[in-house]
Length: 259
Image 1: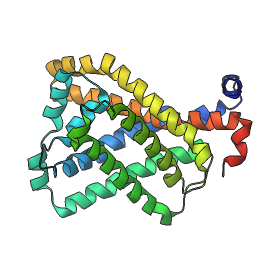
Image 2: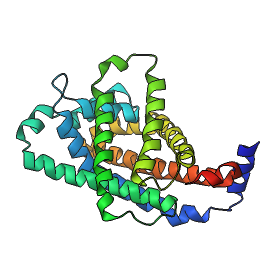
Image 3: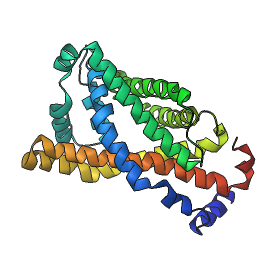
Image 4: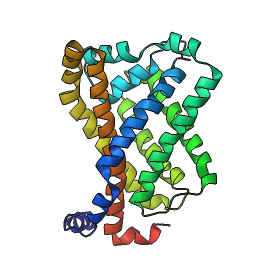
């Protein structure tokens, strides 16, 4: 099988130098820090516009972590301040949050560029970050405030397909079309596989940590666990893209489709 031969070639170390060159751990730490400081406040404020529940971001975060009911309650107590956040946020404050949120897209783009050995994009291509952020926030909020999908048996299929399409499109958008669609698909699939594995790990490890940490350290304990989870998400996002690159390069059939 071509895939099994590709995996053997990857394990043989032919391109493992890229793993160290990517600086996966450092990039993941930056991903988590910037995500918590810039993207999380933006998502909280925007989700506050939901008149139905107003707890969109807290609900999405609980779903993403895959934690227990008790842990979800702690997350909602920490983040669900929708009415106050929306009423007290000015247009200027929202604009500032958006600007900082766009910088989050820059971090993701730089990681993708490093995976594919590409030079940084031109400054005028920053509009791609704005489009990517708008789609990203929209998808997260849609998944959080659409109760029709919560108990649907098709939810898992929709989440898998939608996530794969999003990460596939994200690479293409943030890389400015410099890598072909075929070459980017393995990375999107690997990212979704990694996120599912992280969700299972979160339910086993992070869920009890949130419950116990909230008792011992209060809200700060919940923040520490969420920050650790964001580091894991960063590892999956960049590591999934790198796994896709390694698999693509190891399959001779697809080498000609990189561009």
